[in-house]
Structure formats: C-alpha cells, structure tokens
Image 1 (cartoon, rainbow, N blue to C red):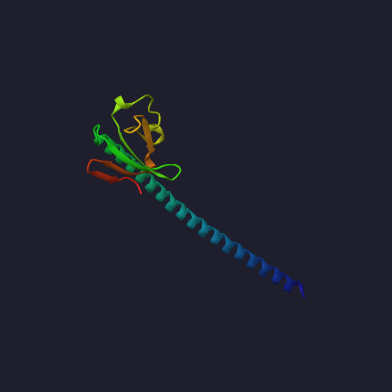
Image 2: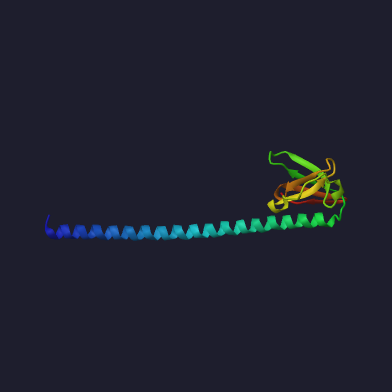
Length: 141
C-alpha cells in the first residue's frame, strides 16, 4: 500500500468514527429528553395523587365536624391488613378515661371509642367508609 492509500483509509476511519460519535450523542440527547418527559409525567401523577389524598383527608375532617357530637362509624384497614369498624364520637369527652390527643399530627383521626370508652384512632389513608345516620360516604379506594 502506498502512503496515499493509508492516508485515505485513516481519514475514512476518522470520518466514520466521528459520524458514529455524533449519532451516539444524538441518541443520548433523545434518551435524556424522553427521560425528562417521563420524570415530568411521574411528577404530575404524584402531585395529583397527593392533592387527591389531601382532599379526602379534608373531606373526612369535615364529615366528622358535621356530626356535631353524634355517633359515627368508621371502617378502616389496620396495618396487618384486617378490616375494622369502630363506632365513636369526636366530642364525647366524658367517656374518656384518660389520655391526650397526640396522633392527629401524624395523620390519624382521633375519636372516642363507644365500646371501650377510650381514645381510638385510624389513619386517614386507611379509612374506607364513614357512616353517620343515613350518610354513608366512601372516603378512599
């Protein structure tokens, strides 16, 4: 081979490598753009779900406030996965045998359990059904 042939082959190889590098860089840009779009989509879904949960929690607080001291029933799923129903009152302080409300800040609904005459609580995210009189409200899915 002559020096010109070697030079042409080397130049062609360099051009091919540069083209491949440009194609790879373009693919990386496309993948990053796709990932950014997916991140934005997931962020939007998370924000929507958070708003939905806050709305349900506020709705539950409003439902309990509307009972105005009447007994109500809450159906919820316990941490171990079992379903429990508790009848209680929000403003029935004379049933209280003792205790202080420390759970409301942690996302729990505190109320006085009608049967045991003690404080009971259920996490707002675990509550399935709220009942008071003829009102039956599905709070969460």
